[in-house]
Length: 153
Picture (cartoon, rainbow, N blue to C red):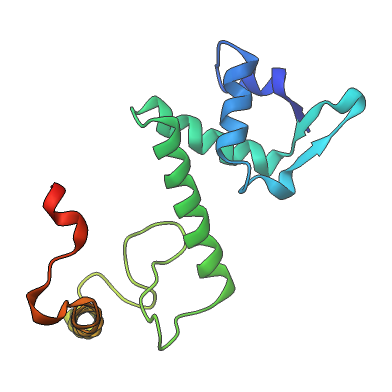
């Protein structure tokens, strides 16, 4: 378990407040990795430190704290999804753990896999186009009326 001051040292931060800001940026991801110690001191587990290392690495490459936290969340969520469920019919395309960029169960030179991926994505686009068309039709105004707020634009 690491204290905030230890985290600041490990992550090469100048102040403890910077460490606290990084903890707050990932508080939802760190939920199971945060504890309170003596005198209500905030403690972070080893797994939580790994998440904070990922966040700090992104911050050092030029991302803002907010953007870096969003990327860490996205990576963590994608990792959690790949651990929970294998490829399914609803979403048959998940990357292999480790971030190789290859699709699960596919080799780099498998053109049939890419064809299937393109077909799946094309179907998703058609579905979304139909939903957008239905929403636009529902939002349409009778008799060419314009919304009341458009005269002030």
